[in-house]
Image 1 (tube, rainbow, N blue to C red):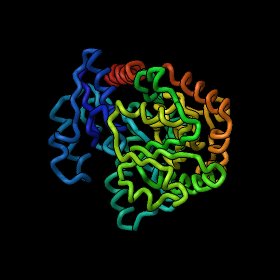
Image 2: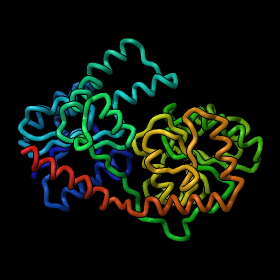
Image 3: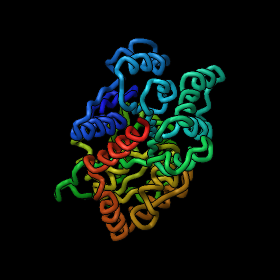
Image 4: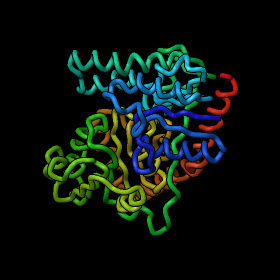
Length: 355
């Protein structure tokens, strides 16, 4: 079948959404399907970014697809082209806007109107009408069922994969080091992490912090980081995919206090590396972590709770190692080939039913 993939995503193994799309493409090609990407580099990106969904529709029409696999923000313009539409989302747009407003990221009236017209409204239409919704976590699934009236059979919660397990030489080697891997953004809970780090540092002066993949410079990161932690903090603005496991191996505890995620690749990789993962009770984190069994969950925005959980991990070697071992076991069946094949299975079935 001819699969047309529509997303403002550059397909490559280095990024987040780009890495997922890369492995999906490889799985479709292994099955013998044709895979055409409409996104960066295609005609649809030659106009203003807000016009992408409409320009993409014209390009998709010319390709005579058998099935359209569209990212949520572009999905609502893909109907009426003679092919079933499979929507995929890395975090439902409308729910994300609601959560963003909950921790102070409120937009101006003008920005809110623009976001609604060019993003939310299109996503809403896609969520209501697409033949299949491929969502990244159970919270989004429940939201789609409640808000958009979708049924169990309309939804597939896909799994993200992990790179091959690291060698024995790359096992967690420091019980005194905490790693954070992610963009330095408010929705990632960076203010909560900073406040919790200050509390932990007062109790454990020998704690080291690794802030990786931040996308920002050391100076700008440290400007929002407690001064008491500056001397014991390593900032790594960016890294290659094959460096991630070695970065994680320098720590024993992984922290991700996000308010909003889809299904965080950084968490999957940290679990795969045998880290004791401390994260928030929301989004895809809840699908991956059972608190006290293969990691620790705290409430979003809870500084004291995050500090207490980090202190628990840092102060109990046996517990930290056991939670890390179980975390690694939890993602043992998440090779990229396996989880991507699951996506292809559902798209093939939707194509057959839609036709």
